[in-house]
Every structure is written in structure tokens, then in C-alpha cells.
Image 1 (cartoon, rainbow, N blue to C red):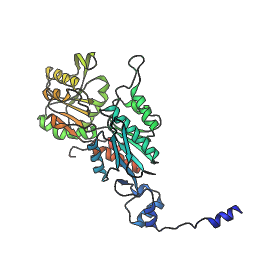
Image 2 (cartoon, rainbow, N blue to C red; image 1 turned 90 degrees about the vertical axis):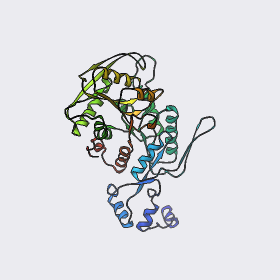
Image 3 (cartoon, one colour; image 1 turned 45 degrees about the vertical axis):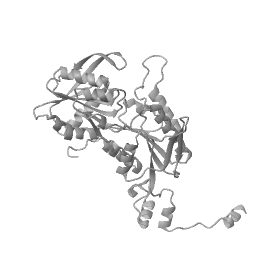
Image 4 (cartoon, one colour; image 1 turned 180 degrees about the horizontal axis):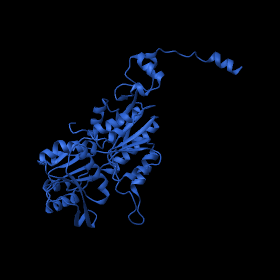
Amino acid sequence: LAPILFHKMAAPPQTLSSPARMTASPFLREGSVGTFDPKFLPQAQQDEASAAGLKGYAGYKILAGLSNPQLADKVCSELGVQQMACTVGRHKDGEINIQLGESVRNCHVYVIQSTCPPVNDNLMELFLIVRCLRRASAKSITAVMPYFGYARQDRKVTARVPISASDVAIMIEKAGVDRVLAMDLHCGQIQGFFHHAPVDNLSSLRDMAPYFVNKIIPDLGVGPDEQICVVSPDAGGVARAKEFLNSLTTLGVSNITLAITVKHRSGPGEIEGMNVVGEIEGKHCVIVDDMIDTAGTLCKSAETLMEMGAKSVCAAATHGLFNGPALPRITKSVMRYVLVSDTIPVKSEECDKLRVVSSGPLIAEAINCINSGQSLSGLFKILQKDS
């Protein structure tokens, strides 16, 4: 009897035409929402999209914190979408106030937030945004962290200290992040600190190497018979330096060698002496690192290289923190150019030696690949010289 009564009481199913059904879909929104490529949808949904005359399903949104709004704008511009409405502010006592301005139910949300200085404020902001999205029934949350704070504290160097990089990873994962998109992590093993969320560690060298070949080398006046030496600031950065060297070779630059500086420290950020492993006399040197903090070590390395007979010295680093007297030091240094990305907001007008290569196009391409189910392996290929 119960099934019969239920059948009589239940409303008849509503049959919508394809356009109406598509409009009713929770994935179809306007404004700040991006679109899936229909070819990555099930065949039945592809047929519906074709019948409705639509380009695709709208299924992801971009949300930006306050750490790097300029980079978020570039990413959205590359994707052709707008940032979703969201209020991120501060109460008078310093507490963070967040309110989403639109529904994210059943949407894939990408949160662009570097945990750069002020590190703790930006980290807590990211944490609360993720929790807000999780409570608002977002289908998935990807934390786009162009700069990962606390990355240098990746192991115990003495007793009774935290492994802060691991603890931050646990915090982000417990908040509800499904995936992390990072840029040039300080050390690759940080990816293993996330036990459930996959981590994509992009490399800024894909865009920096072509810029170096097209802009910096001509400005330095490097002759066809002159050599370029890629210098690693320490043993831990050799892999990164070799990657940059291979990138230049792929772009057709010949006569490249590799060198390593060995620093003798008297304390944190204080260098007592320095040695160089490799031949640098008469060569144009480029120091390759993942970040520049106060630039004390960088400037000291550049001076040492010039004293040993280098023709010129430049630097290339992904993350330009430029804390304290970094920019005045670079301005007064012997370096010709310092190449950085915009993973952290940079005031390039304060130093005429700075050259900024945007990571916005690379991050946008990665978001598009993740959202459409494509492989990210192509993003690690170096762009051609004429790009």
C-alpha cells in the first residue's frame, strides 16, 4: 500500500528541454565562473551542450585573498573570468572577517593566496577562506599558493623545534583543501608533507629562461665566443641551477658552465667567508636561487664572483621577499640585473635593476589543465626563444 500511496502523492517528473535543463544546472553560472571544455564531459552532457548552443559548463570560480591581488588579476585575465565576489577584511581588534558574496555550492573553487609577509596573517586568511568554502558546500577547493611560507623550516636542525613546513601542510589539509598548486617550493620534499591532497609544484624557469635569453643576454652584450656560468648559491640549489642551465641550452645558448659557491656562516644571515667551486674568470655569471630575502648573501656572492674575474653578475630567483635593506643593497651591488617573478608583490620601481616576469599565465594554464582533466606535464617544457 505504501508504494501505491507514494506513487499517487508524488509529483510527476518535470521534463525540461535541453536549454532549460542546462540553465537549471548548478554548474552553469555567469560572471566569475570559468567553463569546462565540453570534450571532457560525458557524451550525454556534450550532446546537451551542443543542443543548447552553449560553449561549455561553467564549473569553477576564482577567489583571491589579500596577499597578491595583482597576480590574481593577471590569472583571471588569462582565463577570461572575473574573481568571485568575496569580502575579506579586518575587525578593529585585528581578527579576519570573511564573507562570500555568491553561492559556491557544487563548484570547483581556486583560492589564490601566497603566504608571504605578513606570513601569519595571510596563512590564517587562507585557512578561514578554505573553511568558509567548505561550509558553503564547494565541490572541491584548490589552494593556489605561489609562495609557500614556512618552507625553509623543513627539518629539525636542533632539539625541541617544530618542522613548521610539515605543520603548515597539515593545517592546510585539515582545513579542507583538496589540491595544492605551488610554485618553486624551497625543497621538493614539502610535497610529501601533504598526505592526502596532491601537490603540483610548478617551475618559474619555464618563463624566466626565455626572458633571460631574449632580454638579459642582449643587454649584457654577450659575444658569440663568450661563456655564461650558472652559479648555485649552495649545494642544495645545484638541481635548480642545472635545470636553468638545461633550459638555456634548450633555447640554443651554447658555452654554458656550472659553478657552486660554498659559504662559511658565522650566524643566520651572516657570512664569514666564501669559496667557489668551478671556473668563473672571464664569464658572465648568473646566480640562480629560489628566493631572495634580505639579499645580504646574494650581494656578497656577487662581489666574490667579480673579485674572481667574472665579467658580469646577474641573479634569477622565483620569490622576491626583499625584506629589510634588500632593495638598497641590490641597488648598490655589482649586479647588473635581478630577475624575479611576481609570486610576491614586488615594487620594481624602487630598484631599477629588478626585472619581473609574471607567473600569471603559467598559473592560469595550470588551473585550466586541472579543471579540464588534462595533464600538467606540458607546463614544465621551456617556451621557445621567440616567445
